Length: 128
Image (cartoon, rainbow, N blue to C red; front, side, top):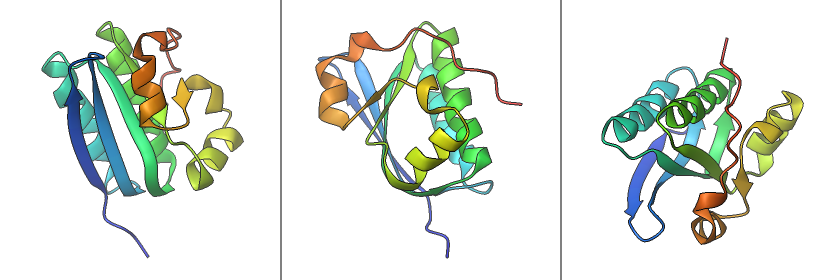
């Protein structure tokens, strides 16, 4: 059973980053919404993103590609993308695909907002 993808965007001016809260399933039908949201933020000069993935219930390869593409897009624009709240299905998927170390991660959004400038400068691999 699929859970509809929801995305909420919250700008945090103090640490100079934007929190994108994602919930539900990221699959081939919904991943364009995540990719387009990140593209729109970068096009409006919001290049430092914390993606709160704690509410993700499912993610397939297209969801992983959307996250990798977002990390690459923000990096190319001089910013970064951090993941907050990685656990459960997504953590297992990232570990199985050897992508776990490709993203800077925090336990939750509060941790990400405490040190947003410490984002890992390594650019992610390009999705195939």
